[in-house]
Length: 102
Image (tube, rainbow, N blue to C red):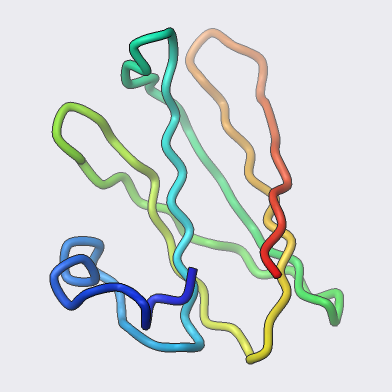
């Protein structure tokens, strides 16, 4: 999501710049029917339509009793990105996901 759409309060909470050319990535790792916190190492990158890969530095952000992994990326507009997200939970095999953004 473009960070320009966030309120000042939310941008400050995430510690990110509000701008049309900055996108926000939030990854929450949960487990079980109650969606309890699942400790994990999360890495992410994005591939743009020009074939350039951009590493996204994620940091842990406490949200109540949970932790989200939050990062941002400056893009050239208009931007279409393919995100590559890898999650490694303690004692589990790594998993990956590639959601798209149009």
